[in-house]
Image 1 (spheres, helix red, strand yellow):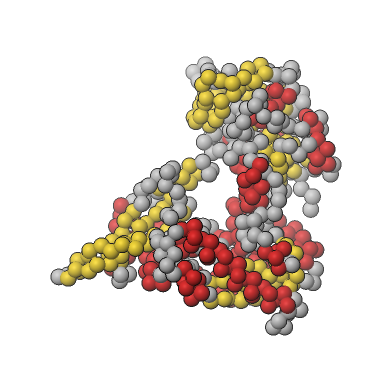
Image 2: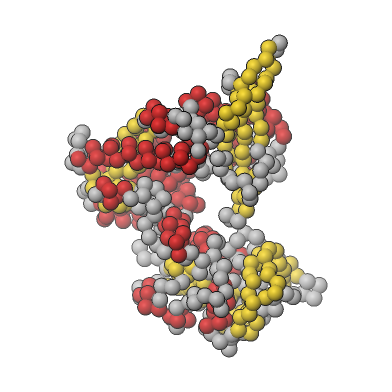
Length: 538
């Protein structure tokens, strides 16, 4: 199926992905590409007649310090264009306006007055002034500003410190705003982007995950044919949804390899097997490599060293199992494809790390260069999707909602939740304590929202501290280990902070852990903010 599409040109903003996510939330397909793709590339991208509009992203740069600008074709195709922040500045600069540096940088909340009743902002407002002016609550982040409108443009928005906070040339359907509608801090941002892509661009709202299954299945069947596929199943959301989708498409032509490194959460390995082998009836090889991993981790305390050991061993074990399947042992004719759960942010970030701009190159996030090393072709059925879309797809495929919407857990598992050296004793204690914490987060409902505290946090886990603390049990004293609870709330990748869990919840969790997990005497709660503390404990 050919979808209408929006092209997002990335000038290097850390929140460019959010523009794409908001467009997708309006059920319109879009792609992010670097701003320096060139006019010929843009014309080729538009050649199928499905390009309905272009969005120019923000940037950390200044138009008079860098050469980054939109290809000329952007303004020549006759499709609507929306400039955001730097995108507005380069539009003004390219079309005959003026941009200047400001003595006062603007970062954070602002109230913007809308002008001119333009198609983009008409009837979109957060409140009105006593004079009747429509006002928008927005998020600003810029040092430069447009000081002179290009010919043909009129004023669309302003603030006292930024007189040209938005501009429009409605004859050509060019719009630009100095603020960031993609972040949720701009209250009407989603409405503005939906207005642009659905009404001004007239893009079809046909990007819907339930409908996408059939489309993805056809693509997989066309790519794979009658060949066999191997997938590294971690139990995480991406690999699980990829496995379910590929299995829907080709059934027994797929074999999943699940490497159990002994550092999973409580009963997680069994849950993975029950879901994929028990309910989906997929072929899954479970490799119990816990002794191998724990043996190699003995005596290693440094977190990055632990990560490298766990990642390297995973690859080694996976390669060994894959070699058997590739060779056609055990009744197989031999696999020719390696499947990965690569998702769109992986693709963007893996390219953006070097250039500061998005490039759609193969991700190196999952199992890296393995396809080349193993001589296998690559199958990435989720590479066009964002995490939210992957979750929607997982539910549509019949995976349990609590599985696909669960908190992320690092690939090294408990290995990076145990401070210092990883020992089996520590992992066993931590697994049980962590399970109690997660269980009670599910059990406690916030009265104000009606949601559980598990749903209100984006990440929660328990950390093992290899120090002993005194505890009193009746008339006796014990010296046992300490664990720390960590719960984090995030918004738009822009903010992350510790969750203010209710005291009653913390009390219940700590009481249960100390009573039920013999070997733990004390429970703490981590209230370190980010920055400087990271979400991870290491």
